[in-house]
Amino acid sequence: MDWADLFAALALYLVIEGLLPFISPAGWRRSLAMLARLSDAQLRVFGLGVVASGLVLLVLVRGMA
Image (cartoon, rainbow, N blue to C red):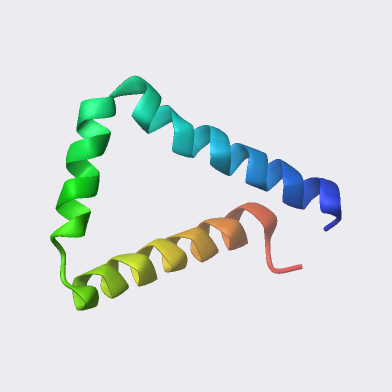
């Protein structure tokens, strides 16, 4: 992996993150309000699930090599 891959991944992340508020600002705002009402433990479990999903997807796409 080189720096170009890292910056490409960051650019793709920014594009995906920007799509939701662009397409549905009200829905995005509601989602953030729902997340704000979660307890710390619930947020940690949610975060762990997102990290685990991302790692699994990365291994599937890039392989273990």
